[in-house]
Image (tube, rainbow, N blue to C red):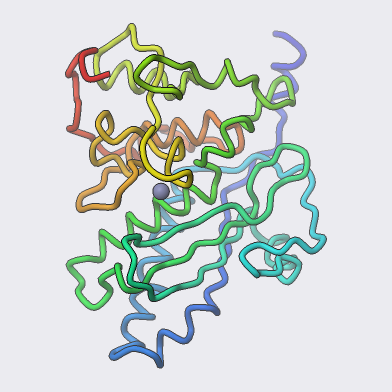
Length: 283
Ligand SMILES: [Zn+2]
């Protein structure tokens, strides 16, 4: 066995522990009709379910170097969360808006490991107007919306494509190890797990990689799987009913090199019917 493979086996790995700050959601209780119920549904029901889903899916490699110096992020001062960060290995600050706009939520990375750039804190803004909280029938939709957003906060973002971490070489992967381009799609992810998933799912061994979304605004472009190929997969660009959390998203996260998938690796993977065994044509 090579020495570096040997050393890699001794890497510290921890259960993924996510802490949250929901203080900015408190006003929901008084501002809205049945606000207490809406707040409880979100904070005591849906958010803990999303966190449990993530903690059941991933474990975390050691964070090398958190810099807790002041870094404003969406006007949030992360230094205030130092204590929480020390008890968890990922922290999420929730906030909300109430705006007449098309989006349901957005998220991003607040704070990253200084060495690997592995995200350690994220923000999630929920557009309360477009998330139906007063009807239980929509609970799953809000759940998948938040699950989707938190994956952006964990690094599923175009700005993180240059930051896939090679755990053996201890450096970021070269772009040509992460994606390739084709005439139809500028970014096709070709890291081992994602490539295996797309080849198996479509039954197309010759495809060069899984395409990312090439349409939409800058925030959306290359931060999602391509909608026409992935359909209702959870990391497609738009929220709609019946999103599936598949092995593609799980593999993408593991291939980034910051998180390891708990065994058995397909435990949390849902089945995607879209494109299943359709061959190379749609790719
Ligand atoms: Zn998104």
